[in-house]
Each structure stands twice: as structure tokens, then as C-alpha cells.
Length: 103
Image (cartoon, rainbow, N blue to C red; front, side):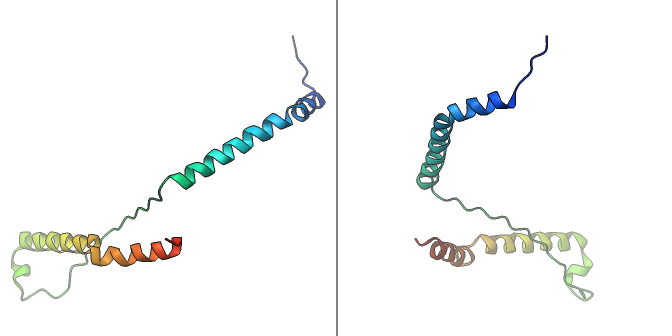
């Protein structure tokens, strides 16, 4: 048994129920706006470090022991990561965000 759906019937139903559709849409918009006002802003950042090994280590201690070179590179990477996380680097960014948001 086939059913034929007439577009005119659907349009009549939508016109008849337009107040309900408008009310539900308005409530959803208001709830979304209230959520945005109540929820504090959260900012997240990701940084990736790429340590480039310096050239010309022929006469240094690093050239004689490869494991020391690897250890030294790891120490440099950890030092750079700590510098990126330090308050001196992050604080100007926080202040700039606060200025932009008007707080």
C-alpha cells in the first residue's frame, strides 16, 4: 500500500504549528546564550618544539660521545619546554587576552 505525501499538507501543518516551532527555537537560543554567559572562557594552547642541533661540534665534548649528545639534546628540549611554560612567557599572553575581552 503506497502513501502519497502532499507538500501542501506539510505546508499547512507547518503553518498551523509555526508558533510552537518559533517558541522551541527561541527557547533553544535563549538557553544557548545563557550557557555561554554562565560558562567561563577556557583557552588552550599547544606548542611544539623542534631542537636543531648546532653544526660544527668537531672539537667539542659532544662530538666524542653520541650518547652525551642525545642527553644534551634532551636537556635542551626540556629546558626550552620549561621556558615556554614559564610565567614570564605566559603572562603577557594572558594580559593581552584580558585586554581583548574587556576584563
